[in-house]
Length: 287
Image (cartoon, rainbow, N blue to C red; front, side, top):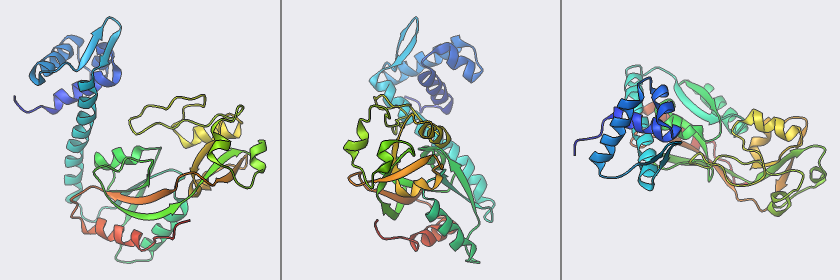
């Protein structure tokens, strides 16, 4: 079998994400018949069925699920090759540090201050993103390093250093009765009848079952809490973004969260090594 081409992977990812050949063809800017032929040829070459088709659209088979995951990673890697090669030609360019907006604010500020006070430190550009996006930004080469959180973020395949471990807090509407407590447990916040816990996307992009709203952005979540529509449990340092209409209460039995600095493996960049070294010197005791 000949090696797979990036064109084939892009075609398959579009169909797998849209689950409809017509919409996938529109997204790719091609006609539907050649797209359908390309996917059939791909299945024939692999010797597996990737999609179950019917009049309403398509559904991924087990093999298709694996193909989608691997194809996304491969396309990200190809994109990263081009971006990192271009960046290597400009060694004085700023490093791009990706971090979730509102998360680890104090640690990020300390890191930026330390870099500013070191004349030999590499310049750094901060790229703020939404929940879980650091992984993609690192893998496709848009970011050089990232601040990420174990166990929430996908750290597979990255080199990492632990920076800070902390507890979690519940962010509640200030007017809710639970906001008067000095501390809470997971049982206290898990099934509040009038305040369902917000549902964040899993690592694969799907959402857990439950009555709470599906959320993806910090601004969306902040307003829903302020309106009394949901609560959430997050690392204590993330409460830096909370609004005046919010109250944070420690959740004493929530699992600890560790902030890490992550970067692509087999990296030989002196600038990245210098940034990681500065970050590790800021490690703080477990809270």
